[in-house]
Image 1 (tube, helix red, strand yellow):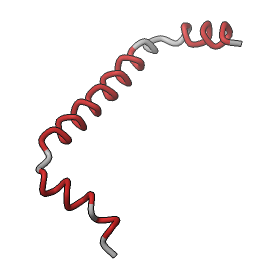
Image 2 (cartoon, helix red, strand yellow):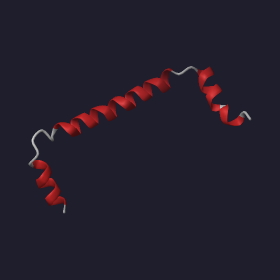
Image 3 (tube, helix red, strand yellow):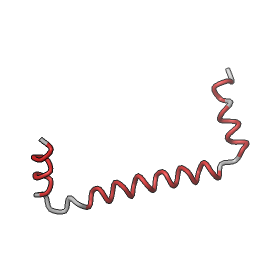
Image 4 (cartoon, one colour):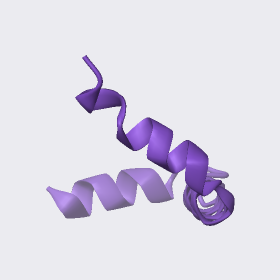
Length: 55
């Protein structure tokens, strides 16, 4: 089954760019997420973390 899918995908021209694009999007998202977490202010983190407890 995998051999059939692999042979079919190899016949499509320009298909090799899609894994590169998806890796770039994945890497960019997590770098930006890490940057946001690292630069978040302590007051904001404490305010958001206490939201579920405020009734």
